[in-house]
Image (cartoon, protein in one colour):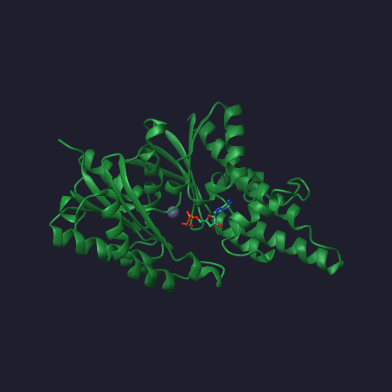
Length: 344
Ligand code: KG4
Ligand code: ZN
């Protein structure tokens, strides 16, 4: 039998993602982003994102079908992100997925966005099969999570997550403090290139011995953001110029250090020699470099899917559903809704 042809819909944040896979083979991955509409607010505005999904969905579905050279009637199943994410944004994708599945008479799979990020890896044909167990570090504007993956379809354990801002959100907020445009991640990366990462010792969130007992694998970035703001205020109050490059490089170093330290600590504690990275912050060169260098020292291999599969997309949702189908999972009933805090 041929592997199932699955269309995946992703609308948990500001990307309208439609992906089509046949089993683990990627056929198309269409993404429409409302990022530009959020730029003047300095972050994603849920209502704006939901409205943008409503307008973008149909053209995105059409484009994905054309790119994959298939028609709706060829599909074996429809998959959709049911959470976690912005409730209103999720509802738009869920409504569309239910309508498609019912009108086509095809099974519908509600899947978890975070597990979808892990599934992005299986579409990377060059990387070979994902081996278990693996630790996954997912870092984006919406989430910062550390997971222990024993099986993509049945056994994913949340080890820790951010207790306040996501890592990408911290980049966006600090960029704003520095007067750089949104999204801040790429801007800080650029500014940091000529800066000294050791110029300022910013705090490493939840890394003190007293924090580790309860928050060994959790993250916190809001204290770091405040520390950057305060440091800049003091400079300005003293009438001294703000060394933007050094601040950007030192801030970035703090984020990267905490992310990589905790991820490799999880690998060591759980005796797992594999680390998978995902989420839009993986675009950060310094994060990739530090993760690769320190993992090599620790004897841990690192997998990083291509960036277009690391950022939010529909292909990873379709890929996860295709694996669920292969593992014998029953389709979802039509009664599910959006769950903004859906656990893995
Ligand atoms: O996964 P993504 O495209 O969307 C979601 O947030 O779900 O991630 C976007 C986030 C933004 O916060 C953006 O500032 C951050 O990823 N980002 C980066 C870089 N490129 C994008 N953060 C740090 N360094 C980068 N080069
Ligand atoms: Zn995401």
